Length: 349
Ligand code: FA5
Image (cartoon, rainbow, N blue to C red):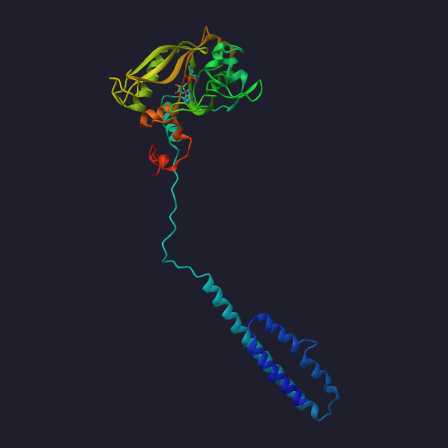
């Protein structure tokens, strides 16, 4: 039995030395010291030994167990340390490597222009309103004095969704919505920026989707001269003090009288060039005094209230201000183009 114990020790120590993983080590432990292990079964046979032999073999068996246990513990420590070192090596971070460059974003030029215009009008006491891009026929046309089959509807080629639903062709429905909300109980002084849609053929100055900013001021004594004063202030703040404006008679079914506003050409300073088509002027918005019928439909008494409205295209304003010759540049998302204007309103280059 002593020989058996000795050979268990020798063989087990050799196996421990050759073990490379904690799992192998665990298997050895179970195979030798476990309930059905080789050492355990030898010990079970001790009952058959004589009284004299029993303590001697018992002592030897204990020593073998202790030696094997100690060896397993030590090897286990070594393996754990090795595993830790390997993991650290794998996860090593070289803090001296240069960082990966992060690209800064910035506001789109149209966003910057719209915010700049908003700031100007907020400074003149206007509040900002919003309206839906999917609009009803009623608010887009009828509430603006454009009944069904009115020929002036052709001025704005429309994307219809159903007979009664469409993609709004201008931001003017927000006038009607806002007045309808107050129903003649209070004055309104608001602007509304947003996207609009028309079945226009895309070219250098037309896009089927573009932006507009609507303005509306309704109160008890609003006059055409107020409209002129506010638009003049806007044009000078936006394009520079030396710029002139002119109002030309025009037609919109929702305003009477109606005008279009031109601004003196920045390129030729009014002398005439290819940008202003030799006229010295460039059109930037439509405007007028709110038609009495529009006021009435929204619950405002036209005998008591008067108002003006205007609608401008920030796309065209941005083109004018920054000398951009094609509106499609705003919508093709070429970062090389967009990045040039990240500074436009406090953005980051
Ligand atoms: C209107 O849309 C009127 N609702 C404006 C208005 C509001 C008049 C309130 C009176 C009172 P118009 O269709 O002219 O008007 O468009 C206004 C501006 O939108 C134009 O001056 C132009 O700057 C811009 N615009 C019009 N069509 C396009 C287009 N396809 N692409 C880019 N900008 C456009």
